[in-house]
Image (cartoon, rainbow, N blue to C red; front, top):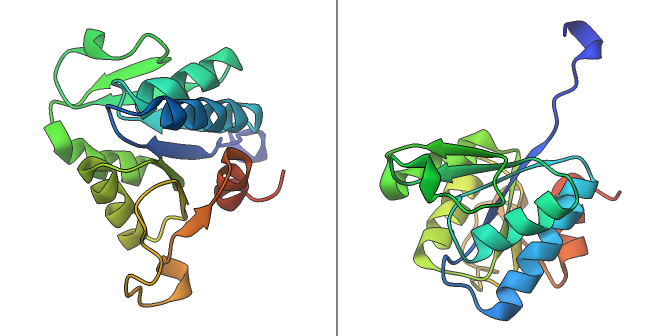
Length: 164
């Protein structure tokens, strides 16, 4: 496709703990489903917890889910991925995840999630925090590099994609 006939779909990263609580997993499922309904490509770390839950939600709505796996085995990805990318980068894949995406939604918190949030903010990507790290007032230089704290999956999706 060329010119205006080619439409690039937004890519939204969903980050969160690999060992999520059931409440975090349910929120992530809903985030994934809402993103898929809006036509966004969901990008995640490809493993369990929040990653598997958001992938499950998106896949249930017919969405595209890309998993950026830390290891070299594509088969290690969760069963809801459309595409599994074996990066072989370990935790360094977090940087690839951020540069691949237009925005990031963090559901819950873990050290890996915190690194993804920091990288996304540093790259100027919009970030929505859904029951995650309490980063409000953490000394952000300006409003453009401040995460948006949200209370629901719908608010998280609207924060990164706009009202829909």
